[in-house]
Length: 178
Image (tube, rainbow, N blue to C red; front, top):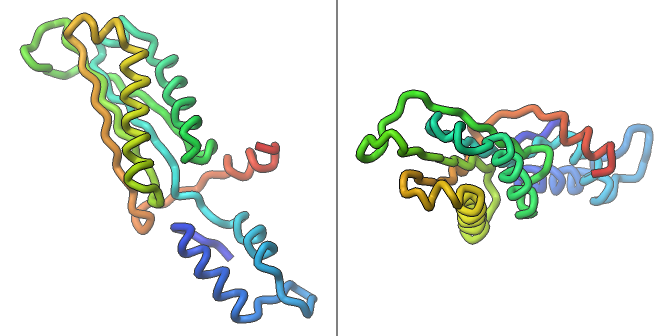
């Protein structure tokens, strides 16, 4: 049995299995609800992943440590307590070809796109975006003070029907006690 998609689908399957009398192999007693949840959780694919894609003008790399920034954003996402640790990915891509505002050579940008799975409230999404922006502004405080730097954050909620994943890291972390 393999579940792909939202938790709602998982609960529908569990409800069906309970009501249809799903039984353990070579056993005459049906599984309890908790036993079914435990069994099915091994097969569920998490769709609540947060992927933070950081795009930036390449001139920013000379003035800031983007590896450190990525790690700080990973910790920021983890501390929101909304996302599974094994699903968190933060990556940064420099862009050599860009034209910003008045084309001043010191102009730089950092654009963050947070892709998340379904299942969060608007308040949680708003808090996530505002937290990422606040923490980014703290990290780039000196750059922002120069007047040639801009930061943006946007959130894209992925539709589970059109998002396919395979991630054994969830199982590894669960087995390691995380």
